[in-house]
Length: 334
Image (cartoon, rainbow, N blue to C red; front, side):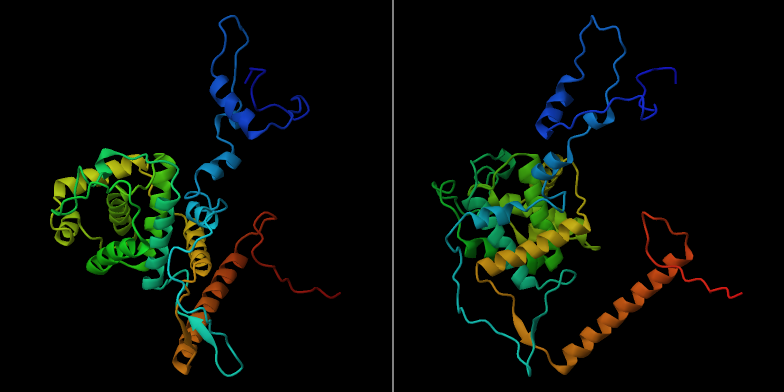
């Protein structure tokens, strides 16, 4: 308490610090701990200097921060070519008599369309990679997924989108995984690229995608698929190889498998933007009576839920920082 350098002093006694750029703050983080021996004044590092600036954290970790742009969308927008066949360019539009809607929502995405978008994002990661940084555990030649010989030029030929889609689609259909698991898989992939500073290469993309699907299915689904079950799908893989790949994948992620709801929603809508840019339109169906009643029932449930939350919030004390509802008091007439 008697230390004059304590941070618990009055605002008038502490000098006003000038604003610093994020690069200067990062440099101080590394140099502030090095204090010369001839300094006799006790040194106390400010708490703001111990933390990485939020601006730099968002730039480096798009899979952790909702406001940071996703890597796959940035890479896809720098490429002028379409990676998939555009197909029919005619779009369905609603009219006074017919309303077209798709059955894909952020809480219940369409499985087939989501897998197409996720595999297209993987395709762009391979095509627009910066280099060929990888690890031996993900090398398909060192750890093959099948007994078929790996081609000599396997590390130099980029796979097509159809090949990536068939590989992921086979895993999801055999393991009966959901569309939400596909979105979480993409989050883990980009988190791996950011944390471990790796690239998805032609020689490693299958095992990297398999490791991300393995983790996503265990985190998202209540009844996860065991590693031995994946060995039944990929019959030439061993359980020991699967366990070692999962362990190293977790270590590269620094055991951070948390996916906030805001990050999940960002990836969902960015995948829809990717689909629109590449003419991968979600299937549209006309709104009939049955679907209209279903939507009305879901809306009614959500409305009742928010009403209950509003009533519960009004019974609590309110503050200026978290003003949820408005208190209504009876007027007193005199």
